[in-house]
Image 1: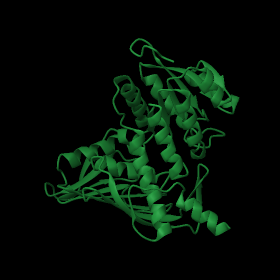
Image 2 (image 1 turned 30 degrees about the vertical axis):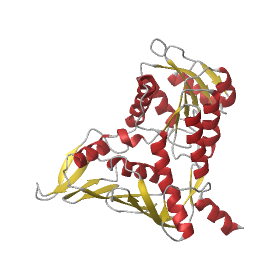
Image 3 (image 1 turned 60 degrees about the vertical axis):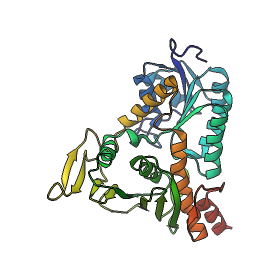
Length: 352
């Protein structure tokens, strides 16, 4: 592994190359390709190894992005390739085993796709293993680097809506997409921890996303330690008119649900809504690359990266606490101490 990080590049390995988004055989967003673009944008990295159970996929990936060696077994790659950074770009049920293996193999940083894992216990073990092995762990909550969200947070900090009071979100589900909105609640609210969660889920028609079961509809009410409240409503057909709505004592900020590049501000300074243009939409995939450049710089500088694992863990805690609230039929105080996914456990109990 790299011994002198000031003169040599960090050796990077990617687990799960996949196919580019919207190409034949693609089963997702092809995020590994975006990871590779992020490492290419950093002057401090070298794409040293690729691991994929499909050699055909890995060879196509190598042709497009480079990569010194190909492995069909990621454990062999971890044992032989002398890696500093590993990206984990596979479906969620494989995240824990791969992150734990990479942490034990002695890499210096791991960047994993979201959501963290199917169960809260797996999420906890991933975080604890990386802390124990002094490994920088990050998750791809890339929206922290997308211009509309940064613009909204800047307006909040400038006092454009007075004192922050409530953060609302709407999306298809609590875990796959909802993890972004729970992360944004912390992002807007100065990373303030949550105090409790109360929620309910409906499972009349289960949706499966990347191999994980998700609720049909859900609602999560979050209370943060500074008194700010969060509200997330989920449904594949939910139409709130805004992906995020941020309410303050003197105004409102709205982020549109689609690919628009403007946000809306309503306060006493203007008559009606003011449109504020941004450089990109909330789905801007360039944000993935920006997150990777930041995590590499953080590793080099010895600071915490923006996409730090502990922040993603707090977002996951709100998801699993909402499931637990539905199971308990009551408020759930944090920190959350369960190991399972109450959603999956309740589904399994219903099938028994």
